[in-house]
Length: 196
Image: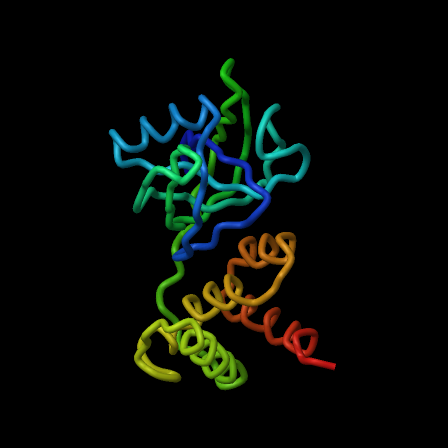
């Protein structure tokens, strides 16, 4: 399969498919990137930083990431460009190179999207947990075990987004190709979130 060139935006967080992220843009390399993406409608890749920092010298990105598409923008109170991006396709970075302006480009392999798969009985509790989280956040849903709350892939991504996981844990979930295995990893972590 042919590789695609994708500008990369290394961050200290993991963007998951279907998730949203707010960004403040101030470095010239990223302002140019946003301008190009705004004109073309194309996205860029968000990868967890393995070494380095978000600003300054180019950081070393993780080998897996998520395509980010701009869904909203505004000026922040401090006069910077604020973006809201949404996660779409997952990818694996095969090679990277750094342009003269410091922008990291990656040759990426896209992952196939998993078709909707029903939750297995052993993961039904996760639909209940996610419904409670969405209720507390004031987000409407169709009800436990219905619509998206019955889809193993969607439930896994949303729980990985909402549960208090470390970035490295979210990265491991992003790398997992099987939605049921992803849910099992979340089930295994649930006891760690119980109050003492």
